[in-house]
Image (cartoon, rainbow, N blue to C red; front, side, top):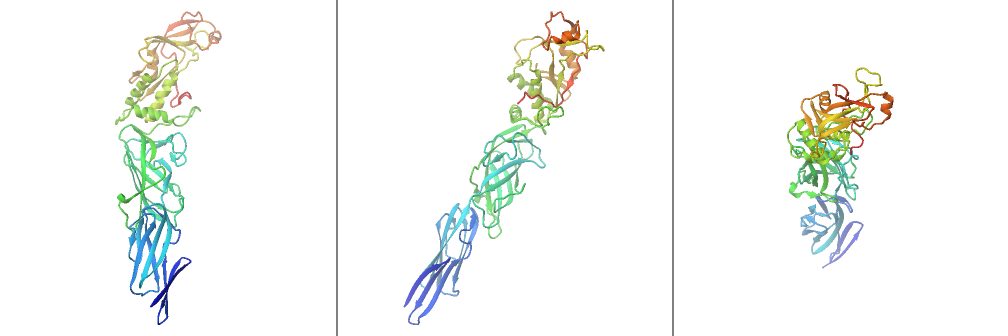
Length: 466
């Protein structure tokens, strides 16, 4: 005959056996040594629940493990220890029931499983070319999910992204993982990392993409689904088919542009503008030139000058149109120089600033953009255009003169100039407006080569551009 009393104290379960008639007393103690109560693990992590029975050496012992809350695989076991993979986040509650001689003693262990989520994604390049523009690093954060920030890469390169992740609680142990991102257009290859307290040093986790477009192009948007696997207890890695998809805002959306060559930075030597361009310039050029796989500077200049002709109206703003073409060209790595035919009076033939100076010039018959409005001669008191890879590009008239110098173009475009026939000061006092052809202050003369000396503004662009 036997009597049994069971109870629990602290974290250990006991069963007390009273054996008659010998009055032998046996205390059965059941415990789960690892993991400890309220330990924090990682969803997808393989965990060993370490069962313990005292005294040892008892015969007829059976073990029964079961999952009371949460999801694990496997969900049951009949061994002394229970090795399982945590398949759900949140509370995981596991029970160990040990039976000896018809008497069962139970122990319950509660732990937590965390599901990480992306918090910081910064596109960058090491061996690759990447130009960061508006905003500040990073391109995406959990608190700022907009895609206003973007990255630019040379075509046929790869993108690097620095990634940081968090969870609602830190993990009990430093846990080794592999992380990757599957995208709708490109993938980011796996990289090793450790998840623990969710603190990251710079470039601690950087993933590299598959090769980007081999053409001028854009990703709007590149959507990345973040996944990870956890190293198993035996040191091996599970297949990626068993990967855990991260929570939070996965997939994360991103805007990337691929350009023909490394973009040209703006020259700030004259104090104008910023070093780089706003997203609108990259977006416009990459959409207009989408799919172009070549490396011809003139193709870029011609196509973007045509875009200006199709979308912008000239209203005396030639300097703005030339600034647009320079900026469009620069985003694709094409050096474009913006020239300015100075509208201030110049001296002809060695004069000293009096009678004989000129105030403006008259063009040959031209049809300013948008083309089709009709041709006529215009009086300009200034004009601006571009020289790109040894050729002249004038977006005001959608004109390209291959191999021409700036002076050749000025001599061709301008047919006459207004010569001041009275005192220079009186002429200049009339203001900046071009003179009427019949104005008695001026005499219209045939253009002379070199009457205007073009000023090279190189990469200096005007503040009126976006």
